[in-house]
Amino acid sequence: MSRRSSIVIEHLRQEQMEALLKVGKRLDGRGLTDYRELKIETGLIKKAEGSALVSLGNTQVIAGVKIEVDKPFPDMPDKGLLICNAEVLPLASAYAEPGPPDEAAIELARVVDRGIRESEMIDLSKLVIKENEKVYAVFIDVSILNTDGNLFDATSYAVVSALLTTKIPKYEIINNELIKTNEFINMPINTIPISVTMAKINNSIVVDPTNEEEMCMDARVTMTVDEANRVCAVQKGERGTLSIEQIKEIINLAIYKSVDIREKIKGVVYGKEKEQ
Image (tube, rainbow, N blue to C red; front, side, top):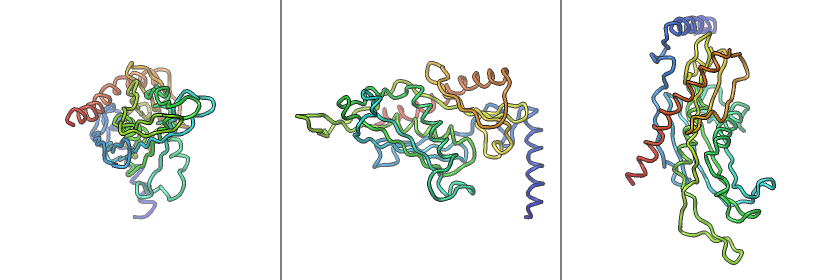
């Protein structure tokens, strides 16, 4: 297919998308506020303290949690460490290249980290072994396996699910010596934050945009909501503007949709624990 033919097809596809949005429909048959099918599997990485594989439509993300003992940051001697990294594997997208994380991957890790941190999902004060000296360090590594839009939400759900299933090896200090015991403790969880990403296309707001919709969107916003229905983190894409009315709509949608997603994650994580 020639480049000219490809451009014509893309233009016609965009016109079709915009026509459907005017009547409350999308190219894949969803309503404007519908998520794609969400699948979550946990405990897949045996060498990790916690892990989860998330499929959101055709977007697929895997997250692993490793726990180590480290020194606290000088300005937070009474808190554990939380570090999140993300990479898009070369096979995940036609645009991904081998090498260090690009700007998009760095932004992805920061947005997910901010949602976890600002919601205070983890009580970092309970990850202290000895103040000023030894704390638990929570390292989260995310790999994007396939991209078809809305990496922010898929990655966040993978990280949250992995953290909820994490078992921390228990360490004690005996006679000033760090000793690893045979016991494990649960991750100290305060709340379950849920990320909800929405895109503005013309004057329509759609939830969980696909890659095709992201290519046509005028603006994008990701909001993270905690269990008390508080919006605790917001990330807006670099382009586009939103009216006050659209911002209000986005906030209400984020709170409303977060409830269903949270229950889905709880069902997978806690339901699996009960079975065990």
